[in-house]
Length: 329
Image (cartoon, rainbow, N blue to C red):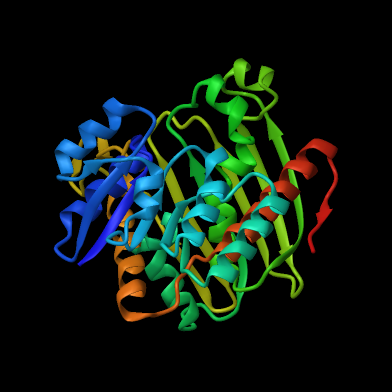
C-alpha cells in the first residue's frame, strides 16, 4: 500500500487528502500545515496523523507527497521532496517564475523521482473522451480549438494581488488544455484583458475578463475566453473544429431532468463550482498518479508541461499589457 504525505490542508488539500484516504491501495499517513486546526480536522476525518514537513520527508514509510500549499512554497517543497527521494504530486503552478521552475525541474531530474503537475481538467471524463476521439481521427485535422472558462464569482482582491494575475492563476488551466488538444506548441499569442466585474481587481493590477488567441507553426488556431463572473454557474466548455467535423464538450448540469410546458423548455442549472464540476476528475487524476507509481508507467502532466503552460501564461500577460502579439520560443 502506498503511503502518502500531504502538505497543505486547505480547500484543495482536503480534496486530495480525502481521495487518498478513500482508496484501498493508498493511505494518507501524515498531514503538515502551519494551521494546526486545519491539519487536525483533516487528520480526524482521514485517520492520518499530524506532523512536520521535516518528519514527513524523513519518514522511510512515506512513498509520495502531495503538495497543496500556497503557490510561493511549491518550488522549494518540490526541491526538498525530490532530494528526499519521494514521488511528487504538486498542484499547479510549480512557481510563478519560469527561471525558478527550470531550476526545480533540474533538481527533480537529478533526483530521478516522478513529478506530476495538477492540471486536473485533462482528467475530466468528457474532456478526456473528446481528446481521445480527436487523436483517433474523428474530425480529421484540427483547425480551431475554442475553450470557454468562466467562474461564478470573482475571488477577493486580496487573493488576486498574490495570485500572479488571471492569465497565470486561472487561464493557465486553459492554456494547458489548449496544448493538450492542439497536439503541437503555440508559437504566437495575443491577449486582451479588462476589469469589468470587480473594480478592486483592477485596482490590484489585474483583469477579470480576458480573451486569448494562439497560433501554432502549422497554422492551427486556439481561442480562449475567461471571466471571473458567470451568473448562471461554472461555465466549462470546449469545442474543436477540424477538417472532418466538430467535437464539443458541453457544461455539466445539476441533473439531466428537463421540463417542457407551455412556457418553454427548461433545464437544471449548470454545476456551481469546481468542487462539484471536477470532483470525478480529481479522483481520476489520483488514479493516474497511483497507477504510474505502482506500474512504473510514464507520468503526465509532467513538470515540463507545467513549465510550458507557465511560459504561455507569461506571454499572455505580456501581450495584454503591451497590446501586441508575442512570439513564443
